[in-house]
Image 1 (cartoon, rainbow, N blue to C red):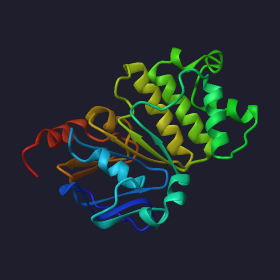
Image 2: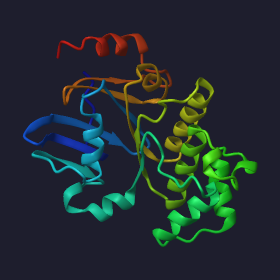
Image 3: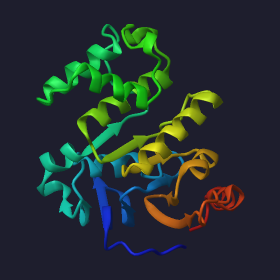
Image 4: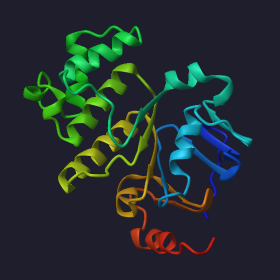
Length: 245
């Protein structure tokens, strides 16, 4: 297991335990994500991935241990944390009867954020959402295009932290490559990204580090060396050892 210094971590889980309805879900979970890093929390169904994200967003309270965003305990600074984070669920929650531009402007208005048309278009440009699609109703959009709209909204909110829940599930190979390129571009400009996924190959392609989650515990951690990708075969072998810790 790789162990790295967590003193400058933007996201940090420290001996985090979470129980729901008297059932232990997360068990002494420890990991951190640094500024500009892409960290993938990899695990199968029931591993505790979604519970981890919900705890980071303040929807679950730790039974013991802590989870912090920029050094602030999530449960004690919910407004601060939610202002700093952009959560992208597996299916982006946007209004199908509105256009991408209308969705973005509506959600920005709820947050009392004012952006010019040029700034909105710049965000759409950054996520490579086609110009002729921006004023079409979302009901005509593919999942990949909906994700791009949600990320453009996060960029306009100037959220430094992205929490991604199974972001490539249901995407075709071309859309996955486009999404991974966008995530890497976001990280290169200082965004901090935590993604949860069951996709070994996708995690190895995009992440700087991978934490392997099994039954609520971190059982392995893998890091990329320099500019190379994380070894897919090594991670897959560890992922496949479901019956061991």
